[in-house]
Image 1 (tube, rainbow, N blue to C red):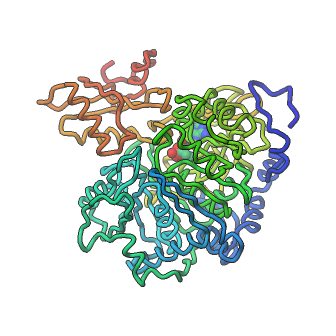
Image 2: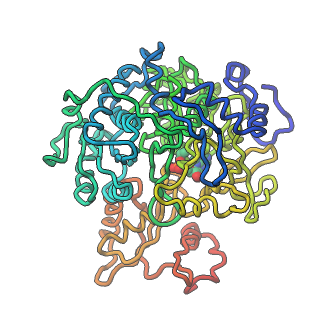
Image 3: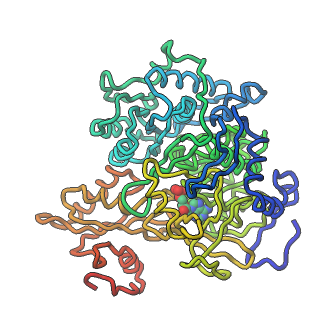
Length: 635
Ligand code: PRX
């Protein structure tokens, strides 16, 4: 692409061959056309690339905003497009999933084999009484059965609620109870750094306390003895060997707006929010964003190295690649096990062409130096991607130079659990600036505004807003529509804009630079954690009366957590107690939520209405000016 001397800052132009073959070689034109007729744009994509049992009457119904509806009255099932239709074409013999376990075991699922497994498991679910609209909680390691369980739920019309396998008892319990799941699908354990994470043990602790679970299905992965409760717990492999596990399973006909899944994510206050996504719009949005942003071609080997337990995995490991008929890699374990070359070995071994990961993983691998990746032939790679937090320019450049050999553009994709799919991202034809997610995906209208909603000037910080609906948007918070309106649509209610909760700036060239969260969400290694959840884990310890946690910038993980605790009477501060508190959070929430530092304090800065001012703690921790503390209870 020709250089544009008017562009500011450090700009990386895509090579002509990258632009040439791309699905969307001319971003500006497509974006303008999409904005001029949004329903027309998405309607055309939906009609040409997906199969529907019954067409829609209207592409977008905005009469009851912010409760938008997409593809009104249409009938489909995401599984019909992800699996069923491929059984009629040559795609059925193609590898859908190449799985490498941490111990080195390998499994390859063709589309046909995957479909058989999904049909069998869907039949098992039906035989167990799972019906359309029922909630099923899934708590597993990164193994193919996790994907099969999700797909089988969708096939029978059940709503899956996947809880990340790195979470512990308390987090799992809260999510089971809130969704009122009757069935839990789990596994005995997961391999991580050569050790077993005892998932069944954690699941048992949660299920014993949860009132709703009637049955547990357990996949045997790690093989150590586990407690199986008679009458309640069933082995997956035994169920799949029964005659009820029929390979002939109908795909449930769903309304485009019927729920596909809920996924809990941390918000500003209180308990995690149950984000709800649907069959129709989510299908169209995820598949199209993947195809265009990563220029997905039939011969690609796509590796999204996230966990299926997070939205990145839902959208870009499970659903979008299958809908596009792509071949995906799934790797179970840690990137550094047994040595820090494991990922590069996988790229070479399977000829990965597109690698999509998080800045924290890049920074983690960068630490070990260039010699590890340099031992491998990484020439199959043609595109790279990043997600989860702002990528610092040094990490971007290392990724681009050492992994991408300066020929692979880096797609820095900004989006959220709520948005379902990429919202701000380059396409392969867009010139790149390290650290910027560049421009909105075609048809997405973003702005950076002040409190009143006026666009701020170039390079000024403001609130990121999304001005128009998009197909993969969350439809509501499960059973909590008021909180949905309050959390996302109340700040700019008059204008009808969506508030993602991020601050950003836009430079002279219209490029968006996301800065970070404006609320009490902390991103640790790209994982989204709410201060409220970690604080309630801390106060569930007998020694803690009150607690506050903050995120502190961390070179490797983006942020780490500092905790401030007031002790109950009769407890004394000690190094051992601090240690116990860290472990307690790890045990309750999961290792990612463990505070790095615990401080025992006599008081916490609060407003007169009793709200903890984490801003003051943060400023103190960073040695900054604490700013205006006039509203503080006891300044
Ligand atoms: O703060 C933004 C950050 O991650 C948040 C969304 O987190 P979650 O719902 O867990 O989804 C993560 C994976 C999609 C956003 O509000 N974020 C995500 N991607 C980026 C990012 N920040 C900067 N640049 C990104 N590319």
